[in-house]
Every structure is written in structure tokens, then in C-alpha cells.
Length: 401
Image (cartoon, rainbow, N blue to C red; front, top):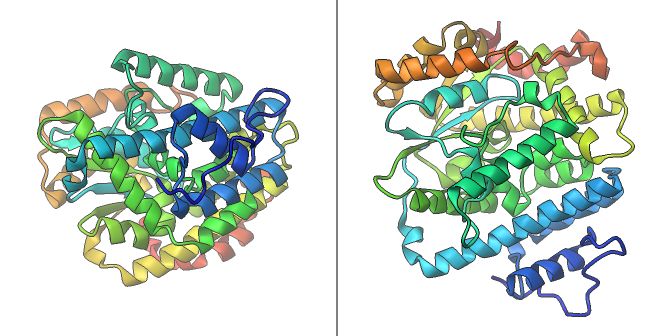
């Protein structure tokens, strides 16, 4: 680890309430004390770390409990970085693990990415890491699989108790695959933080920075997961709507990836993202932003994604993308999976389709609850969204009409 950001023993590790204060020196000092590593964060990720902390203090309006949760979450992410570096030092062969031909599912939020990931995860020869492993890619010493699953379930139970609507917005289970932004969180370089907390200056920081180091770091975590799995190396299936914001950086690290890009009417995407942000941010804030503020904030995030998408899809090889309309996935999920098998050269047998069908039957709304929202709930109008998404609608008209 770098020594540039080592901290002194005189740093104020804890606030008067006993939690680690949300400032750079306090968190780094506390992480150094917990791990025994003088500098628990590399220079590369300090700017994003600093931008996130500043936005949390100035913009997020965190409650006392929210500050404590944010502080502990960041501490755990710093500890995971130390654990990964330690594993790499013990197992130098990790650096030789190739992540070959990954299948990467993306699309704006609420376009069916979670559905498709859970279907493909049931195909033999493909592997989508489950949430309990994404949450702890390098397990703490002495932690059993059962204890890690139980910890993941406890975290989900607490989250759903604080925000019951999230169960319908994004159903999760420790054994289901989940978004690989769990890995990018450990470099403090994911817009998922901007969904969890109202942090507009952090959004701008990520939008103007170079995400290639974060994706190189993402590959380190995937190597650790593959190593931990043992046996024959799988073909990975990854999913994160936020890859859409940095496709060029993703391909710089995974040049042989295939991206499955899901599409849906923006009139559904925008209010759904705003609803998710409002729900998630209510957990840690004691003074939530107004619906209009959340709407403008969410639209700004989407507009940054639209700009990045227009640039990347105009320059990256078309052969590296498979476009799928949301309506097709919902209407005929089995046929979509079979077609992907032909295109991506993996075998889809009857048993896999039956397993996927059973999962879909058990977890398709309204069984898990509905996620309801309207355009006007967050200050949107058809005219506003038509203007914001005009280029997207023009390029992908056949996929969303």
C-alpha cells in the first residue's frame, strides 16, 4: 500500500459519539489501527474517497444514525482493501488469472438487468457471483460460509426494515447474484454511492475523472472471487446498470467482453430511478430532499449517462454489443436466453430453462410487491424527458418503441 497517506497516532480517530468521524484523517487512522497497515488506501483512490467524504458532510444531510452507518461502511471498505492486498501478497498467482470473455449486462436502471442476470446465472458454464461473496470478496479470517451468508441476510433484513419499498424495487437474497458495483464501492468509485446518498458534487467528480483505475481494481476483486471459487475457471456474467456510464473504461480493462444492453422507454426509467434514490436516501437522512430536488438530481445523473453512452456507442465496435428490448425480455424470457446462448456460444438446456422459469415465477411482481411511480411525482413531464432523451430515442428507437 502507498505510504503517502499514512496518518499519525495523534489523529482524532473517533468523534464524541464513539463513531469514526467522516473525515479523511480520522477514517484512515482508524482503518490503520484496525488493520495494522500504516496506509490503508492507495493514492489512486484518495481523490474519489475525499470527494465522497466532502459530499457526505456538506450535502447528504445525514442523521446521527446515518453518519454512523456511513462511517462503518467506509471503514469496512478500507479494511477490504487491506485484505485484498494481503491476499495478493500471499498468492502472487492471482495476478495471472485471466478474466476472459465476460458477459456484462447493463442498461439504465429499471430495464430488466436484474431479471436477466438471475436467468443467466442458472445456465451451466456461466457463473454470476452471489451477493454474499460480492459483499466480502476476501472473507475475514475464520469466517465460515454460513456466517457470511447470515451477515448478508442480516444486512438485507435491516435495509428492508428501514425502507420496505426497496424489496419491490430491487429484490435481493444472499444466494442470488447481484450488481458488481459491490466491488467498485471498495475503490469509492461508483455512482451507487450517489443512489444511497444525495451527493451531487461527488456525481460531478466521478463524471470528470478517469475510471480506468477503478476498473483495473474491479478486475483484482474478480480474480480474488475466481480464486476463492476454485476448480475450473468459469465464464463470468456480471451486471451493473452503472457500467453504462463508463463503457470505454470497461472495455479498456476487459477488451473481449460482450455487453448485453437492455432498453426501456425513458418515461419509465427516469421516475423509477428517482423513486429508488428517494427510498434509499431516506434511510440515512433526517432531512430528506424534496421530490423535485430528487427528480432534478436523478435526471442529472441520467443525462451524464446519456452523454457517455452516446460517445461510447459511437466509437466502440458494434460487434461487442447485443441490444435487447425490455418488452422482449418480459414477454419471452426463455427465448431471449436461448437466443443469447446461440450468440454467445453457451449451452442452454431444458433443466436450466426450467430452473430459470421457477425463479421467475416465484419472484416476478406482484408476488414481491409492485414498484409504483408516476412522472409528475418528481417534477417530470413528457416534454422534459423527450428533450433529455432525444438522442437516445433516435439511436435506439427500434429497441424502445
